Image 1 (tube, rainbow, N blue to C red):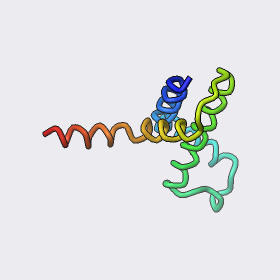
Image 2 (cartoon, rainbow, N blue to C red):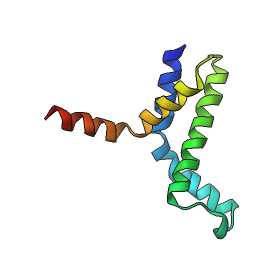
Image 3 (cartoon, rainbow, N blue to C red):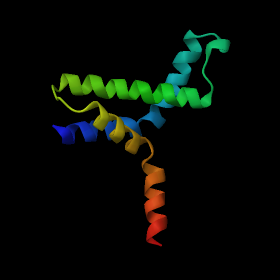
Image 4 (tube, rainbow, N blue to C red):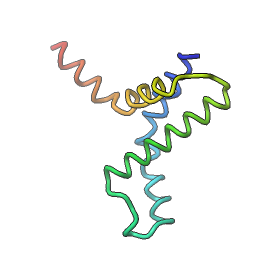
Length: 92
């Protein structure tokens, strides 16, 4: 069951970039301009929503995964390009 948690977390973390414009559009429709978060805050909101979606999916799948493992795998999914670049740079 831990493997499912890692896979779902990483996929949802990687999907933050895709969900980001939709989250920004949704917030812009429902909040006043003065209430909108700045760009980094919007990325955090997008990440949090994707982690909530991952948690809901894991709940539906009836897995008893670790919250910390879900968060760490979500971060790995979100930063997978930067992590891959660092590893590739060390190999050179």
